[in-house]
Length: 356
Ligand code: NAD
Ligand code: IPM
Ligand code: MN
Image 1 (cartoon, rainbow, N blue to C red):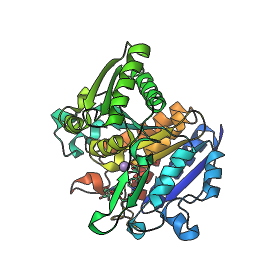
Image 2 (cartoon, rainbow, N blue to C red):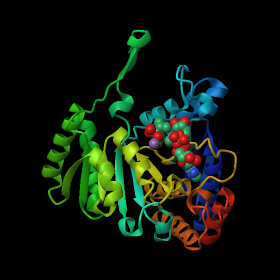
Image 3 (cartoon, helix red, strand yellow):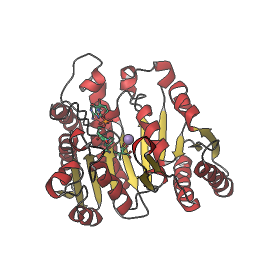
């Protein structure tokens, strides 16, 4: 098959990890007889530096014309001034919105070989397999915001809103995914305090009762969920939640497999290109050192093959190769816990080697 793929390397470790994921995709293309063409475009801080805009129109057009987009990460201390006109993160939020990517799938998959790399005990995490559906184009991230007043009276606000339609569509996708898995769905909210969460809970419960009576459904408050995730992670199958809660809970959940550097994500809408990225950021503390874990991005490339190109065998091959690398004891420093660590390039070369 032919596919036109857009790479958005971004900032910090972004260019290092997307370069390695690209090598893996090229290898898969030649091995399975596909023709992938790649074009790189700017997003984030690097785009602010070159043209003052974290998401140039040229990048949006290229993404819209593509079959799928693979993104590294955006942001960094250079662009962190709170009074700056714009920020790298604005570019990421805008491309998600422009492409209508309301569903962010974040699988928390535990490779057996990594169980002992987690800071949590084996008996708690063994067998964990959770699929998060994070709502990605609504909620507090996209609410009205502003400032007024001055001095000690200066006030800032950002509002949180969800519509019935926004909740219905993400809950339906999550419920359908549950039907393909262990048939359980948990909706996470803060309905004891927040009005949008009450609408979220009512809507989710109605959709589940009317359309998915076969799926076992429950609701959990987000503060309690933060605890359950590290106390009894095996009890969850598919989890659906809003934009902010999903962001926070999945960084927490990265400690189940042991590192942020292991978790990929897929952002999907209704048709059109999907966007694939690791859930982690630009890791400024290790950028340029050649030690970042490329596996989250490589696993995001596998999700791209599965979800945007319907190449399930190719995606399985990448995931199996990652499993073999881990089984062989190879670890980047984020997972080595003081043991012997290999670098970014060596890790992706090990994956290429096991793909063979
Ligand atoms: P971060 O995810 O970049 O890093 C958190 C910690 O995890 C750091 O210690 C980092 O070294 C480590 N880490 C992350 N990815 C790793 C990898 N692949 N291999 C090894 N270690 C890894 O979060 P942060 O430091 O809070 O944020 C840094 C910048 O990234 C900020 O500007 C933030 O806005 C941005 N960010 C971007 C994205 C994105 O582009 N999708 C996501 C999160 C944060
Ligand atoms: C993520 C990041 C982004 C988010 C930021 C950088 C806008 O943390 O992809 O998880 O909050 O969505
Ligand atoms: Mn995040």
